[in-house]
Amino acid sequence: MRYSVLHGPVFSVLEIHMNQGERVVAQPDSMLSMTSGLQLSASVGRRGKGNAWLSGAKNLLGGESMFTAEFLAKRDAQVLTLAPSVQGDILCLELSDPSGFYITRGGYLANIGDCNLQIKYGGMKGVMSKKGLFLLHASGSGTVFCQTYGAIIERDLAEGEKFFLDNRFAVAFSDTITYQLVKATDSVRDSIMSGEGLINRYTGPGKVYYQTRGKASLNFLSYLFSSYI
Image (tube, rainbow, N blue to C red):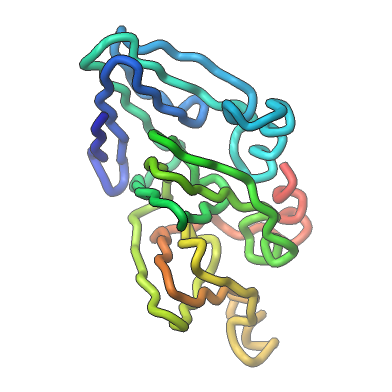
């Protein structure tokens, strides 16, 4: 199996070349085109993750679809093309045990290989940091593809190095990184009046990937409601 990202960084698509027996798991409604030797099936939640409906409910909490689509190559030389739901680039995360990545709400597009994807509880700081209570954790030895809004910037943090980011722009970060919710400035007044309020502080070592555009912020009550659906 081989893949390439085409037409980036704004109107990116993911093209995957598959041989017989190879599989791709993706978000529903992400298929742009496929050749005739591919078989499409759908399931609730993620295959092999215990109770299917519970797995699907966890997907919803993480900002993903309750269902997953699976593409199986029935013969060699098949091509699948996936398109993100937003105008932006596609981030390819190569996984290697024992480390992994956290993917923020709505970022997951697809995965190939031996990937272990689980929804993890992020606590109240997840609500306040504009990405919801839950994050998707990816580990294993496969590849996970993330959809982004705009272009992708990579920041490599050294041990103990700190980096501040409005989490509307965060896409993924290494699970070796710790993050805390902090005021944008020492002054509460300046934090509020600047429009930044509370932001995330990431502390290395590890990588942070973020996008060059972010969706407009909601008011607090609207945001709390949207975090649960």
